[in-house]
Length: 100
Image 1 (cartoon, rainbow, N blue to C red):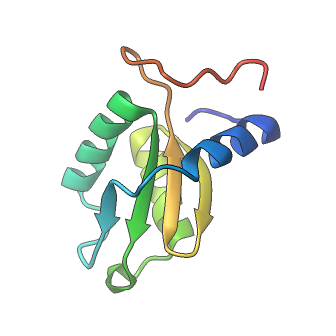
Image 2: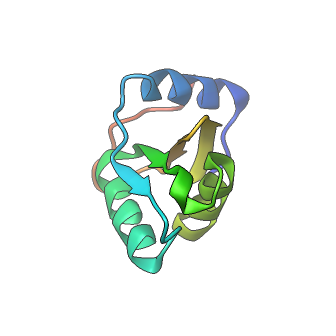
């Protein structure tokens, strides 16, 4: 898991404001298939916003923590029903965090 400084997390939160949710966690919760798809999306995008539906039985914070552990990503924030994850891409580096 990537450890983020306070400034890096704030920078990622500001970037996430313009990002639309790409995934929804529903009544099935966090499944292996969901983890695989989110991991692939993190490789392509680095920063993901996820919508956690009320039917999932999870809070956004719980889903964020579970997904962060299973994908090796850093939890950025959980607000309301939304969660944001960050993981630097091996091949598609888009976000530069150094010096932030």
